[in-house]
Length: 323
Ligand SMILES: N=C(N)NCCCC(=O)O
Ligand SMILES: [Zn+2]
Ligand SMILES: [Zn+2]
Image 1 (cartoon, rainbow, N blue to C red):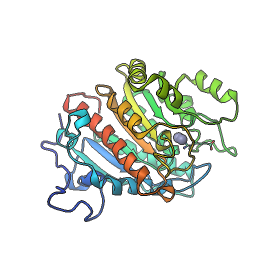
Image 2 (tube, rainbow, N blue to C red):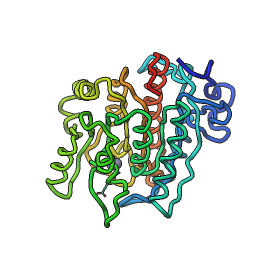
Image 3 (tube, rainbow, N blue to C red):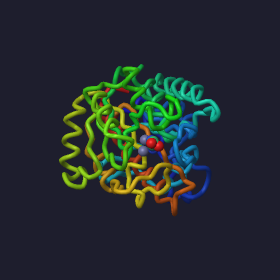
Image 4 (cartoon, rainbow, N blue to C red):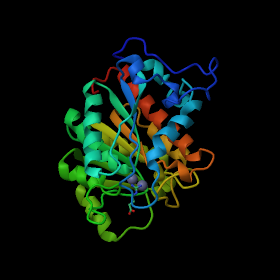
């Protein structure tokens, strides 16, 4: 059940044109307007950890703009998420673009503060570096969590130019730090060239299972989702979505695009198939609007965040105590 009484929902788009006014996610209220929220949508405008094209610092606001067209009822999950639980936009975490270590610490502290209020997080990146401090904060509250990671890339590499905190390394650091439950780690959508066979060996040793983009094509969404659900079981679950899991045709606006990816339909369907999992928080990263066209990427991202917030709202309404 929502902890805030009757949730305050989005601005009514039949009364106030949806393109009017400043953008919050899905035209939801700001956190300061509701005081307390069950799900906090929070931006992390940070992209100092990228290895190729920059620009994901603008991702959160692009997703908010594209989310103006979302509607209150989600037929695919038969739920009105913003009536089931209070979902609010908590604004952006102000991170230092010139000091990655400080930025990581700032995200961890700010995420910890929001989680301490009992809210679950739907974080809008930002590059994938931010997953590490988010996982630290979530693990402090829930213990080591199961991870479902949608990405073209493993992001379990060790260092770049000797740097340990980058967008290609968050999940190796997370395993090293013990914030993940290594019996329930999955990548989905992996594809593209690697540095060597050893990347896969290392990844497997860390405990990850891989569903490649080709597996999704050959085995289909339902079979893949069943397998993922079995691995997750009833553990607290964190979902991390790098928008480059989608094919560049579905998400051109990203920093390290790889051919042969998932369709947005496949991604959304796998997420919908997670209903009933104990989703404690999620992130959506690597939207870089400067390379986007006609909001293709940010629309796909806004729908992805909508499915994730719907899953969280359903969990809350269903009385799952894991906040
Ligand atoms: N997390 C993202 N999007 N990309 C990681 C790519 C790392 C590399 O340049 O090898
Ligand atoms: Zn990626
Ligand atoms: Zn990534």
